Length: 137
Image 1 (cartoon, rainbow, N blue to C red):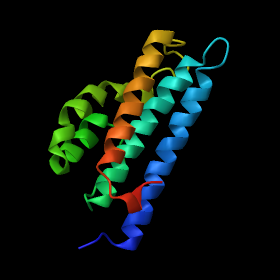
Image 2: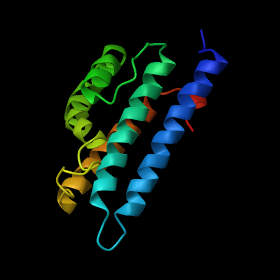
Image 3: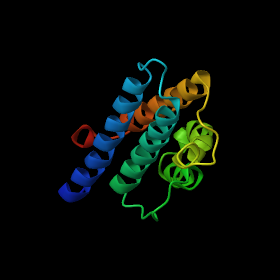
């Protein structure tokens, strides 16, 4: 049975937002010097939103959270083959808050931000590949 049209639209919206975060992070890497704190934040957000899109499509209820550990476990329950990648993405969770507020370290190094962005792209693309064509943005 094909997914409900409203569920498809909501899942597609999550993936569209994730794509915007990736686009923002890619652009922020081109700044001189790169805006590494923002890159790391957008990488986390892209992975989070892609995971929420997959869960939405499968009608898996999730709470309001930035935890990629929690979301990744839920995603692995519906797409077990993705579990190794989702485990790899879990450390991105801290970028939802780290570097965002005064008192925290100023910026991640360029290599750290680039690694986060690469992981986020892999999560997005991998989750996108398991979606039906109708859900893809």
